[in-house]
Image (cartoon, rainbow, N blue to C red; front, side, top):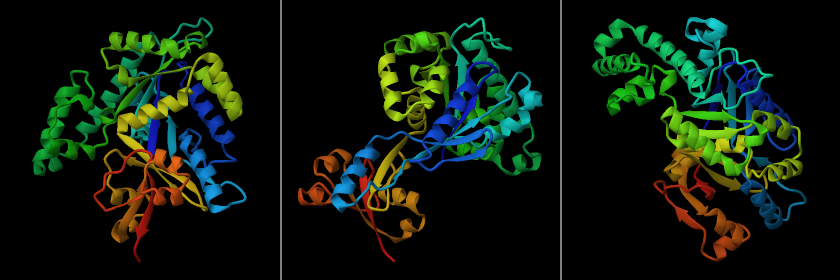
Length: 366
């Protein structure tokens, strides 16, 4: 499953600093993880998952391997939607080009500057709420343009789509995003084909100073802006683009020590990915063996056969059973052999609901 996050924001809010830090992180992980740069403004990085290292150690011992098996974490694509400024929907600041990129992502991350710095020119940026509203307005205007271009003949022959488009136009003309429009299940399904920008889940990324980048302050900072912007706290994540840039230059051990000194448990990248997973209702199941130790991304509530399909679509038709052990049980039993001996490994059918961290071995027919 492809997980992609589009990073948007006005100039000089820290968006490009964050994205460049992600690219450095990507390069730093090249020795251990697969990665790719699709375009200059698209980077693919590994989803941090400490469970993979633990499974690799267990697999090495259980299989009598001379070295650890390769790690293949789930991947996340970050798209830097550069040039998004006031007037983007009309093509200002290369707006048309980059708005097309955002149509392909699963989650929008609005980076806003939650600090004052006399050495950084705001370039249209006023404050967190105003900056957010400027970008959102551009996305809404782009969506309204999309709605206006829906073919009249199509609308006449598709009553459900016609109803969805009418409701969305009325709703968005009041300055509200598509995601908050009240549509029926059928209308929502019909509207998906339009790929509206403001129908996508969003996160507000608060870029703070180094001085404010402390775990103890995060809740206070988020509470302040959630109240100011009239949003739920779950929509926010606090980062420091400058610190992320510094972390990207460090090795894993040094990065952990630096975060510890700052009083932060997880990097901003990790918390951003975690929030994106929450927004999309995603989780990971795990596979391990001599060939590789890997994390696979699925929707929460996915069945065993749907999980098998993430590995290969043929697995869905040829599915027989899934042998599953919870991650904690797998670790306590030191691998498959111990889990089987202690009755922790169970054979499950197609309809079994997967849990986050399940270690799985699929039984597939020919």
